[in-house]
Image (cartoon, rainbow, N blue to C red; front, side, top):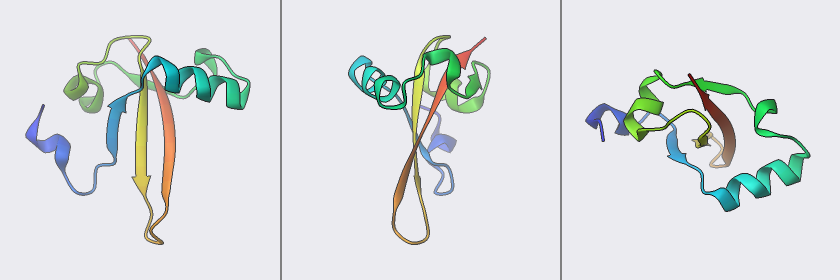
Length: 76
């Protein structure tokens, strides 16, 4: 993994498991096509070796101590 990928201001990015993806899509009654996109040439996608169709789980920590989850689908 790229050492710059662990910068303190960069939210944690991981490739979501199929179970996580199914859960999120069901929870929001959406399809992968409804998710915001992340280009495959984005540094985060490259660092994860993500390919088109993968779903990226992003965990952001807020100043109040709470976590927020965001989801992106990788596209070419």
